[in-house]
Length: 481
Ligand SMILES: *[C@@H]1O[C@H](CO)[C@@H](O)[C@H](O)[C@H]1NC(C)=O
Ligand SMILES: *[C@@H]1O[C@H](CO)[C@@H](O)[C@H](O)[C@H]1NC(C)=O
Ligand SMILES: *[C@@H]1O[C@H](CO)[C@@H](O)[C@H](O)[C@H]1NC(C)=O
Ligand SMILES: *[C@@H]1O[C@H](CO)[C@@H](O)[C@H](O)[C@H]1NC(C)=O
Ligand SMILES: *[C@@H]1O[C@H](CO)[C@@H](O)[C@H](O)[C@H]1NC(C)=O
Image 1: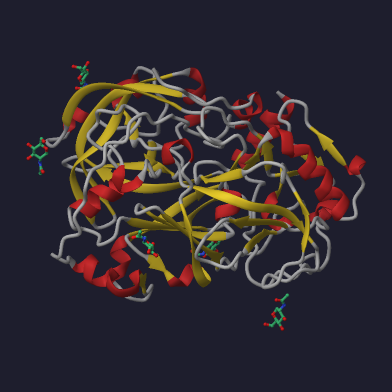
Image 2: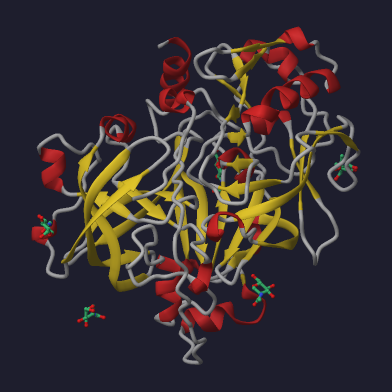
């Protein structure tokens, strides 16, 4: 019996057109330590990633460990992999917030019980193994059933046999609607208590991690991956939508030093989570280097943040949502009345012209080893639009079932476009500003203020594009259905 997540109703509606907000919340039950030895048989990747685990993007061999992501309208990021022998190509949602990797069977799609793009045909593969263990995966929105299976997976130039995934043969209506033939499933990359995780399959909430699988097969030297999410300037699907790098760091996509943070021990350390020191509204004229802090948000309670590439927006506990929005408005020189709340979605609507004077939001995380650093999101990062109206890309969301954590934020793609992130299964998260140069914000043309980028923003601006078809449908559905 599984403790599952509760996600406020608005999320269901927000996911109509795309894989918008997906959270998997499982309460891991047991932690059976597994010991991993670091072996000395270096492969070419290992050699490459030796030393400072730094990849030189111009090194052609290092490109092998790098995999381009497709960005679907800034809602979801997808990786193309091959499964089976001969290979069947699949497009999988990259999700740092859940554990299982899954796709559906072609049979299930054919009989209209599953709604993926292509799915997988096990009978056409020589290497397919049915583990026959039934598996149910419940997300914040949607649910699927299937059987644990094993296959050969080819990811970039990595080829790994016996990789465990779930072959789905049932999707509930919510997942069916959400999938909308836009991809073939999902690859789960969450922490699962890292190298101490029970990967033997006896705990139904844990799934063997691809990264640890690569590591134990000596294909990467460190159980480590890093993520760079590009923004789309106009909300359309772009193939140069980002990069996931297995085993290393790509210097090209980050600026400055990586700062290391320990994974917080909430919820059995299932998620890539951080302890929050402070969430603040920043003074508008603050520079990236020395931000001037404004009021603290939600300061009365110890808070945590989950880094989740499978969530599109930011989500904060509903009890701090109004505090955040009202303070943001007032600190930015707006009136409280300039913000309207959509009753169906909970989203805060703000005039597109006024939105451009919103102050930065600052996030500071707890770290014993680094001096405190505040990551700032500018209005370009956290304002989205549906073609005519602007909204804060922040949702009220109460996660339940995470042990030891009453107050949890989810930092989705809105945050991860701005911040380059690294994930070490030894229990370390690394963050540095992303080197995104993609600044354009896709606010409706007639609302764009001339020279609006005057807010001390030299470095990045992730260029949220939110006027794509998917987005339009999504927001429209969320707002008007
Ligand atoms: C996997 O095994 C289960 C249990 O025996 C069975 O019901 C299911 O049809 C099998 N799936 C495939 C694709 O072979
Ligand atoms: C895959 O796993 C099975 C069962 O554990 C094992 O018999 C087989 O040798 C493995 N194949 C490879 C290529 O490791
Ligand atoms: C990032 O996305 C933009 C489109 O929004 C594209 O022009 C650019 O080439 C991408 N950057 C990289 C490094 O792929
Ligand atoms: C874990 O890896 C990080 C780099 O990702 C390193 O800085 C840290 O020292 C390592 N910690 C342990 C306990 O090995
Ligand atoms: C922006 O860059 C210019 C030139 O590189 C520099 O002079 C200026 O101080 C920077 N401004 C901020 C806010 O970082």
